Length: 247
Ligand code: ZN
Image (cartoon, rainbow, N blue to C red):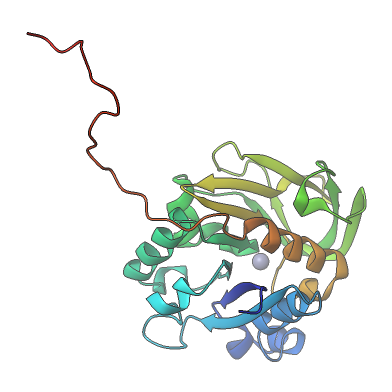
């Protein structure tokens, strides 16, 4: 045991193969750049999985049993993720595995399954500026981040974001075009912790940005399992003698 947090970075990995513009930004896939950001902290052991890696999208029972935190980026092929794999990922989250969902993963099957809402939002792709405000500086995911920081070019994701009321809103984004967005939000489901982070459009080098890397690394530390346990529904004997039973 290395004592490091074991992260599996899951990427759809189709844009980078089919689209020259995306390939130019992420020649070896977004997952490798996200993983590089985690590895440079020295706190993580990183593995990679993607949609077409194998019939189980690289997410076998064994892989998930050995994953503390799963990072998810998907966009054009959410529907191609098999429901049985979504069931399996959900089971592990409820038992304590962490989940970090990035950008267009807001419409992934697993995120909508865990949240139970449509997860819809407004969007616009004109490479405008984004200013991210750290609104909970004491939160572990905000550690070391400035009060606000900018991305020069981004895709706009605007409110209303159809999610349940988050446990914490850690970041709020303002876009050059005028919209705002709850861009960094946390949830807990079962024993598992979930963080959604909005930046990460595939045609911009967002996962090379130092602040973005810090957010993702902080989130991976925060989402690491505190316990890992199956949730059952047992019928149990009383601890004390119960005297109020009817005659
Ligand atoms: Zn996008």
